[in-house]
Length: 296
Image: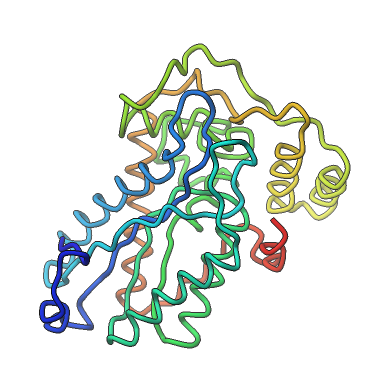
């Protein structure tokens, strides 16, 4: 893997435009409880990027892999001191402009490594993807948009890859810095995890106000996307908000390793489709309500 920042103009000019893949880690700096660093999402994303490089290089040895500098940006962050949030409209423009620059040089692929499940974040990346596809014929792909949906919806195919179960895989009751993310960090960067065993369980708070309305609608329409939105709203609007949601004390590095392996496997299946020219038909959570990204 080559690093874009270290390449000269002449080296970039010599790259085969049809057989060059850019990889970029993208995740925000966000408070992850008292036990994980604010860079948790970015740490996971950067580790995923290395694994993507390894797998893509093995399967497509004639392709050049170029690493772009990481972007510590994201939307829909936990509104607690320590989080550094970028508005959705700005993130969308940044991603599209990067795609536009690469496209104008004749390149076709930018694959993102990401670990942030914020609603506006995922909708914004998908919006930038659609814009790049439509206006530039350029592939901007973030597999986590689709993997996170599998996590939240307790997808059977994903669960078959794991010994973990519902409530341990980053789904709604384990949404942030809980069992899943703590397990990921125990596997990838254990020295950064602090006294997680002592933490009490943090459960989904009572649904009130708008969150209660959305939750009721999710029951009426049997919508997992609306249920997910209701959880997010209930949590961030809770007067006694905790900086994590889930059961971090039950985390285990083995579960983190399994989740990383499953995510890499699914991501490579998505990358394969893109390289072969197939359309990605999957959509992230709340895509039909994407106008809401500007209100988070």
